[in-house]
Length: 359
Ligand SMILES: Cc1cc2nc3c(=O)[nH]c(=O)nc-3n(C[C@H](O)[C@H](O)[C@H](O)COP(=O)(O)O)c2cc1C
Image (cartoon, rainbow, N blue to C red; front, side, top):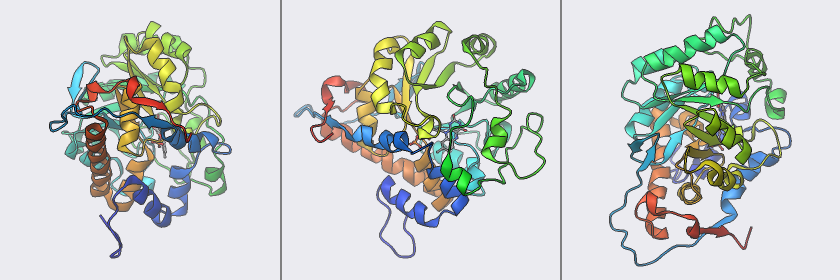
């Protein structure tokens, strides 16, 4: 993909650069922004770069296999599409375009509770995409139960309960560019908008008192495996295990919630040490290169999620743009597996990563 005869976009960084130039002010500030001084936002990216790779030679890398086992199912590769709200702000085809790209690249797509497309409409439009559903728990538990039942009924394969957004982070870019006019399909009972809605309006319907017994209830009531998204400590990972979760996603919400928390890369090892042999541990935040993906796997993650780069692709080229972003990242993963001397994703381990001297 290229623009106006300019050189083709060959990395996610190229997509970021052009998206910065071309997305409108509201979409750009919503997508790019983080909380507070954006220290965590920047460090999410930097932390993967503070890790050096220690490649092995002469292991035979002619045949490579990036597949991983996730929730007991073998998946063709370790990259997932992170849930992101309000994709229509970025492109009119929104989640449907993203799901088409997911299907074309065998990537699992996580649909946000605050998506521009309802779970049922997305399932009807792109039934061939493998979908997980991300849940924000509403104060109205009747609506929450309906949303969860709807996801299971429409073929979503896991429930990702996001727990790091009891209140909205202090997002100054969103506030100063007055992000509004947001819409969510399929939640009319939970959210009756009287005018252009802002991220804060949607946050008002989310339950700030969510606790571990709620997680246990979702596990008991939902036919789907439950992953807890937004874990940053070993202690919380152990609680997720005790309360029946099938997995945890080490995440700081893309640096959009509490500023100065640890990056995914730095929080991951302690979580893997605590629960990695009993739960699937995934990680997100700042993943922009194939080398980031293999470092995450080497530290013990089963898979990674990618947020903003998907939106850069969506904004610049709809389904084709998202597909290209995923293909670029997956090609880099394949290249990195060969060059680090781990032809199968399962060959990666902690001996292959170290603190970088330049960090
Ligand atoms: C614009 C935007 C919207 C997001 N919306 C949601 C959401 O609705 N639910 C959720 O659990 N996480 C949401 N996230 C967080 C992502 O799922 C993910 O944790 C984060 O973006 C990963 O970091 P990255 O963007 O650096 O890849 C959002 C992130 C962004 C950038």
